[in-house]
Image (cartoon, rainbow, N blue to C red; front, side, top):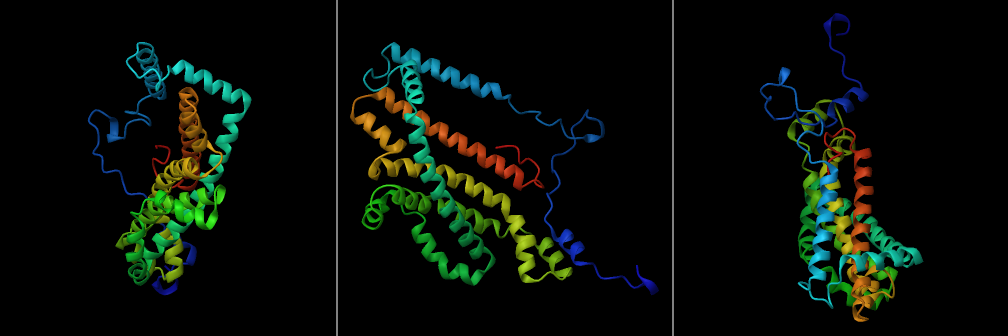
Length: 297
């Protein structure tokens, strides 16, 4: 209260702090027997990490046994030990790392371009209804289009190789980011919007300090999906129109009748996807520090 009992208007930092989105309270009711109804300890109810590793070991052992028993097609599915030996040989020679690097470069470049385009387009459609009505029909026409159907068109304009793989991957991963960003633009409820108006935030400040932070969790979810799509589409495009990369390596091994190298390439694709996902989750944790549970996948 100021002199004469007149309340002073809030300062701009106070306004921004009040308008900043906060996490909703945990709706979980108190647990009986826990003092003060407090939440269970962090990590309670979550499976230890080694259980996932044990399951992988179980699958590999099952694969090995079924392949050696002849249950699986001998010429198509070699034992897991032969695939591991081929992967070790490829790693020792550096060949697999070179192919991983090429595929990773194409996938990440496509993800960066497509993800940025999808976020900007989707967030713009969500924040500005007129813009959303103008481009929404076109976006919904392009969104279900299979990205591999664009490979022949891309070859005409970009030729074979890096540019084509990046363009097709960018088109594919744009749409998960678009859908998530458009939905996230409406994540700021009426309370936050009313608070921003009450504290005198302008249109631009409301978008930057209220709507964008509220949309970030959904945007990151869409980008995470888009990253996996970018890897898959980059590998697929390499199979069709690239002289190298994991996709080309897998196809050549299959056509040469060397299934152990083919499966080694498939394992390398999975390892690449898992590594990129781990890096993305680390970035998400550092960005959404205000959001509870960002450490969980």
